[in-house]
Structures are given as C-alpha cells and as structure tokens.
Length: 313
Length: 242
Image (tube, rainbow over all chains, first blue to last red; front, side):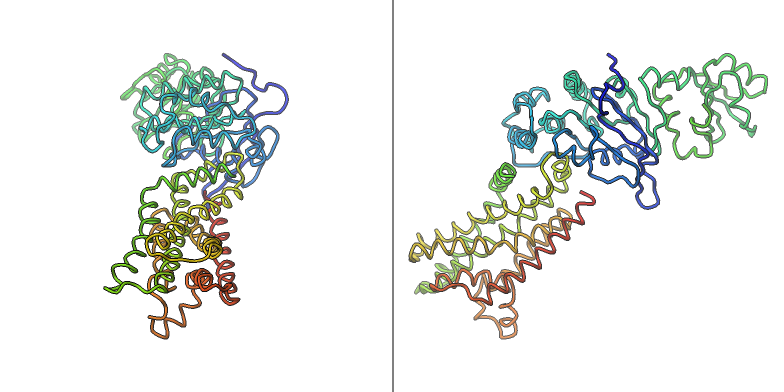
C-alpha cells in the first residue's frame, strides 16, 4: 500500500531548517521534513532524540528557535485553530468526572466538521464504554479515549506522540487496527515511536531522527537495507580501528569499548579480510535485525568517539 | 465556549468533595453558629442575617478559589495541552474557566440563603434576596482570578494547599466566620482592607436595605485589578510550558 510521497498541492507538514534548544541542549538541530497529504509516517528515534519537541512545534505548542514549520501551508497555530489537526499527546491522561461520550462530544464540537460522536467511539473501539466515566476505565481503554479525542474532529492530519507506550500487546493490535482504518480514509498520519517494528508494521514511510536531525528516511525495507546485511564483531585487542571502514563489504563501523562492530553487505568478504589482518579474536557474525538497524541509525551518544552512520556510509 | 463551561460545571458538580465541603460545609456552619452555638435563648434576628451573609460569602469564596484547583489538576493531566491542540482558543479556555467558577459559586450562595429563609426564618423583600445573590455572585470575581492565578502558577498539590490557605486566611481575617466587631483593634483596622471583608460587606449592606459603599466598591476593584494581573502573569508563564 504505497502512496505518492507528495500528492500534489500543499504538503500536510513542512519543516525547513528548524532548530530548537533548551538552554545549551539542541533538542532539534536543523530539521527538514516534508510529509505529503495522505501519507502515514512514523517518526522513529530513541528517547530524547527530539521527537516530542518536533511534535510540540508541529502543533504550535512550542515556537521553533529558527526555521519554519507549516501545516497545510499555514502557521501551526492557524492550522490548529482551523481544526485541521488532531493530536494525542504523550503522557496525557483523560480528565476525571466526565463520561467517554461527553468528553468526545465536547472535543468534536470545537471542530468545524467533526465526525459523528458514535462513529469516533466506534473507530476507537469504545462503543461499549460510551457512558462509562473516563476515570473508571482501564489503562488501555483510557488510551483509546485519548485516541477518540484526537480523531473526534475528523482532522486531515492526526498526530500521535508515542501512542502505544502504555499498552499491552493485545491493546496495541486493536489500536493500530483503528489507526489504519482512519488512515485509509485519506487522512495524513504522523506518529512517533521508539520501536522500529511498530514503525515498520504501521507506516508507509519511516523517518529516523537522532540528535534532532533526520538520519534516514524511507520505507521500512529501505531502512533495513540501508542498515546492511550482517553484523560482524570481534575484539580489537588494541589494534587501530582506522582502516576498518575500507574493508570489503563494510558499510558502517562502531567501536564499543574494546569491541568493533562492523555492518557489512558481504560478511564472507569482510571476515576473510579480517582474517588476513589477524583480527579474529572473539569473532561473531550475526544477521542484522531490525533492532540492529535502528541502533546503527541512532548511534548512542556514549559511542560519540566512533563514527556515526552519516559519516561512514 | 458554552460547551466548555457546561463540561466544566458538570465536572465540578460531580466532585463529591466539592458538594460536601463547598456547599454542605457553609450550610452546616451557618446552622451551627445560629442554632447550637447561640445558647439557650437562640440567636437574635440580626445575627441570623449577618451570619447568613457571612457563610454564603464563605461558601462562594471557597467555590471561586476552588476553580483554580481544578485548573492545576487539568494542567497536571496534560488536559490544557490537549485543549491547545484543538480549535478552542487559549483565551476562550481561560475565560471559560473563569465563568465556570462564577457558575459554581451559585449553589454555595443559594443553599446558605435557603437555610436562612427556611430554617432560620429570615424574612426580606424579594428584591433584597435577588440583590444579595447578584452582588455576592459578581463579588466573587477577584477570588476566582486569585484561584486561577494559583492554578496556573503552581503544581497541582501546591495549588490545593495554597488555595485552602488563602480561603481560610481571607475568610477568618475578613470576618466571615466571626464578626470583625469581636476582633482586637489592630486586626479590625487591617480586616476592613481585605477583599473578603469588603465582599461580605456588599451583601451586608443589601440586608440593611442600602447600596454598597463607595469605599467597599473601590477596595474590591483594587483587589480585582491585583488578582487579575496576577492571573494574567501566571497564565503567561504557564503558557510557555503547558
């Protein structure tokens, strides 16, 4: 199910050269990102990669330090005011002493062209709980209420900040089913997550962000391919790591303590070359997993001494 | 905005502690002061009236300041952030909250007045009852703003404590519980400048059949400006993080 990257006309979301700092910390550092109408995009990154800051700027909750953010060609606040956006924010909890229906109906009524309340409840899988008090629901049900609140206004763009963080496996599955149903109606969807698998299963396009910048952007397949075919690791035992990126097949190098991790497109050639250099102590060869791909694309700050994928690929 | 007010009023009236302490307590204290603590001969008619106004004012004050406690709770739940990502403008959210406060003071005022009329046989012309309700109602505005300021400025827990503290301090010093006539001189001269004292005076003047004094209105206006400024400052500060 692939969609045109930019379905003509104005992009749903456009970041250009956006930065945002908290004191000395650059949470978002020169972000460029365009999302076309109708796309389902995952914003993938570790905790602290800048996902929530990006989403706050997207919703006009936080002004960018520099650069511009546009939603459907408008300032974020204007787009929000016009009812073009629905959001499910991180760590939000439903307010007590209202019923599910009252809450969803209230939010729907603030939008110019809301969906019917019953429809929103149905989509979020809340039909049976409409008259229950929000504060008497389970965690998974409360999460669905927040989803219903986000889509009640029938917005063209739905933004979900780590929507499944508090859900168990079954609740997750129900949640994504509902979300995909909403996307199929031609709406644009942007969600953040730190699980590559979740991004891969539910988005047409994955945007990996790390340290406030886009480090990879493409379909799940493209991201995995980019991450290379296998992972070869061995003990350096004091040998210099400088020439490792030049070995046959190697696409990325990372040094963790005394251990070198090579991402390679051709593990046989790499291992032969390593043997030639006498670097086979504690040698391990493993196929690249989704998690490896993700780790490679978002090298942890602790490895700051090692080369980042941007520099080595 | 009407929908927002309706939602918030509903939430407030479903809050058992609000109904119990916000509405029940002033009525209970009024009856206690006028029927049980008044001694074997019972309270005189004047005390029945002035205690009624004092306790209605106290109940109204509690409901008004309590609005801010709700705001702090909403803030901590992320609900204010959620509202900011809907088409509802922040200005309407704030004004809506303020108006909610002014609606929820009404049950507190009316129930004490009912107790006065039905239980203690307080009799006044209809216009006086009506004027009393309207003046006590409008007069709560500075306190609503004070509560909102605390709600935006402070954490959820701190707001609860600070608002309760403000309520008790203002009510006691303002003479809502015990008449200022019973205060020592220094405290009495201080009390007449406090907002709650002048707020109750709005009501007391009506029960004496006269219009509120100019000083009373001026003092309340000054507090209104002060608390209003505080609420705006607190909201602006909170808006950066909310």
